[in-house]
Length: 167
Ligand code: OFO
Image (cartoon, rainbow, N blue to C red):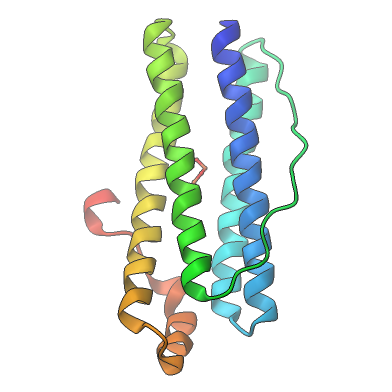
């Protein structure tokens, strides 16, 4: 495996692991604030990011590279509001998308079409995750400080889907 690409993929393992830990922390925050639907949503997101990470670990090793399992800093758990929670979600997804785009850019520079092809799955996944994060944030902006709106948002969050255009 091209060393520069291996390094970028290992960095990506770290970003996926960080996202998984961050979403677990967000699920826990929601659980302790009475938002059980939101907690379930983030427990699921956390699992998904762990799958993204594991897929990379296996791919690196299968391509005769060496996957490095990273140490992870303690994630944030100091959210002041649902809005802040979901802004953090969108920021995290945008960050991961930028990193994935960079891996793809470098694959083209190094003519590593195999990794380029592998990374397309992540591109599609990010498109959907960013869309759902934006949709949820838009709904929260409409709801504002309305407590019964928050109640319904929590009740219905696991039925929301990404817009059809990205599915
Ligand atoms: Fe949504 O972060 Fe993984 O790819």
